[in-house]
Image (cartoon, rainbow, N blue to C red; front, top):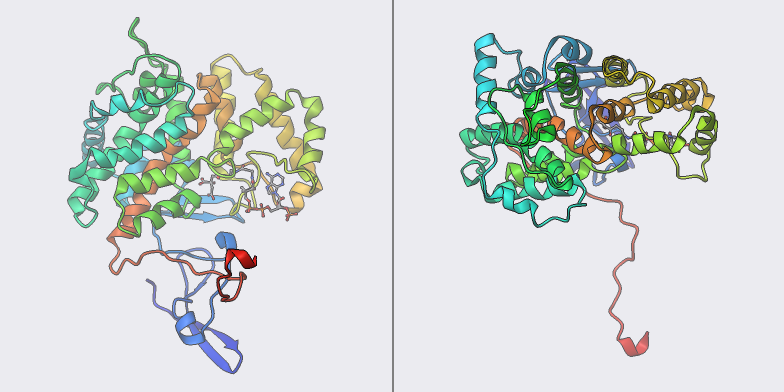
Length: 431
Ligand code: SDX
């Protein structure tokens, strides 16, 4: 924790409290209210945590006003252009960009943990073929607790490291198996001769009947999508992982909780919802109708892929994703993709509309990702599993940071209670 060099004065009735303040490397100062209840007898109240810092972290920083995203200080647009996913994983996990030898060792450890226990294959047959792949991932990742007992003791740094490697290595395998199961095709084993992104594409799209050749365009686009989704400070699913593991729950159970939270359409489920929205709009002449609906307070419809709790400027990931969408669809010869045309015109009209400008609503990471994934051959139901696969390193990095802190406390918020005061039970005859 940085040294406290100033305080905030809070007057509550006849009490005046001096609360320590901390100045971060970047971002707003924070007021430490941990002793507020003990000294002042009051709680703070902040549903949705719009003004609340839940932890100290050194991993990722977002400047919502400027539209900047830094991983260990490196801007996301530089990492997306110059780095690759497993190198970004190393950076997030260990704090620095790796040397060539460190990277080779890390990639080798990941490669050798990509297979799942053979018994896990049997799990899938318990699901209906039309199960959503996110339902499968929540179940199978949680069940990893039942297989990898030698990496569930979070007090053991070695077991934490093994769990870290296993989760990052096996998530693509599990996501690909979830996809294969829903399309009725046999599972494809990981290949140690392929890089991380190529291996995922092979496990999703290879079939036993012919040799699968990885398209380098798709592999590069896939790796960039993984990188853009890797971590994002204390978003809902990361906060879920931190809260779950604060009780001492094992890493597989905690990550499964994060997957469950990510599934929601307000969070990681927005990429699927966004593409389905673009398909529903169907053509550029229907865009005004949907923009009007998004602005109508009486209509629950929102523009999926637009808006963000933190970004009040362009999401830097959306900028890179938009550029990648143009490149990938052009290279795949689908540059006239109607969904992409609707997305671009919708973005243009929304950004010119005072409603969106006043509320500082811009495209977020989910607005263009689905267009690329669809062009790559993925069904919309696989969009959020790919987000979960990518975010696993962020969840694990934040989990490692929290678990390694001395004096870890279980997360246990309080509340503003407005229910009944104490009252006596009444017998049913008198009701
Ligand atoms: C992700 O937190 C993260 O970092 C998440 C993420 C990550 O990498 O982990 O970045 C990934 O989850 C991106 C967000 C994906 N979700 C969507 O695209 C769904 C659509 N967006 C909205 O549901 C919304 O913008 C949220 C949930 C993303 C943010 O909601 P907030 O911060 O709680 O903001 P809000 O709902 O209070 O909205 C503020 C105002 C409201 O109007 P008023 O009540 O002030 O009149 O803006 C309006 C909202 O009605 N608004 C929208 C809108 N988003 C907000 N109006 C129309 N369309 C939208 N998309």
